[in-house]
Image (tube, rainbow, N blue to C red):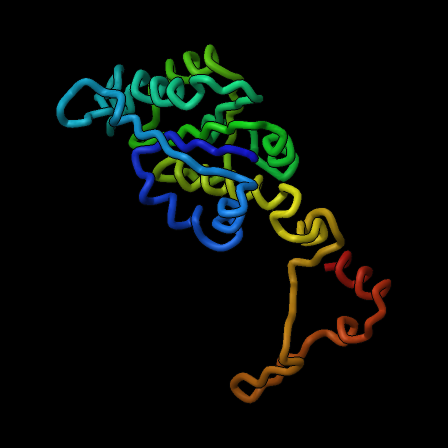
Length: 216
């Protein structure tokens, strides 16, 4: 079983998605597990404050290093398998299907979700002392926090695990696939115009269908 661990201030923003549909089924079938550690549990102030003003000035607040590091350390304590921590950065390596395949080979994947203006950079260096670390950019946009990229990685990796999608052929990039897909009915009439499924998809000629899909 592949175990995902999210270091996040907002478990409630993640778990509804990670319990739904294919991911929820994968959790029930124990192909993956998902757990959370909140950095607020590792501070010594009564307010649960985890952010401070940035050195050198600038807008916003920065997450402190030690709550994040302690949360990661708590996750990794006693782990004997192959572990990796994921750090999100717009300048990181682009996350793609090849990287998803690499992550699928680990036993424990820790996803460090920043907020505000980011996490004190020293946390990354300290986490490297605990386990291997990969730095990813998930898409070209900048997000409010690391939760959306983290969920994207859990999703992308999980669907590549044997048995999660039922058939290996369901993983699109492992077969000839087109971005254009169709289902019944054959013809849809909308505002007096007919929209019809391409004839080649109705022929049953798989060679022609594959050629059509490769061309899309």
